[in-house]
Image (cartoon, rainbow, N blue to C red; front, side, top):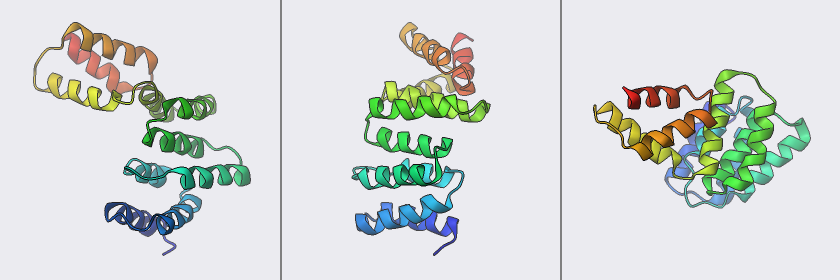
Length: 169
């Protein structure tokens, strides 16, 4: 199919059933070209587990050479590295993307990914702390410090500020 949503759905299904990687990367390449905002590709990347990401990196790098640097391509290139817990390799792409925008939502997304690049367990710990606070329980000093550091490192990430406020309350 050539429809963006159909390619996206097909790719997610291929990941679920562990389809042939060569065929999967072909579909990835087609979606990469059609997904002008990068949202579909980013969601697909977040569903990649135990897969060789090198073909995806080559595909995004080739598109950058052909079309120039775009924020969505840089973020998705970083996300591929983060899927393999290669935070140090992701950071330069995220920093470059951050310098290219002043849109609050994009900055928040980039800052969140930078936190993940620094700490592969960030999302898990953040989610656990959110569950504790939402259950009406208090956090210990280390957890509050974790949230303070996240809020300071990611000033556009509203969820970090809200969670920190909940921890103080």
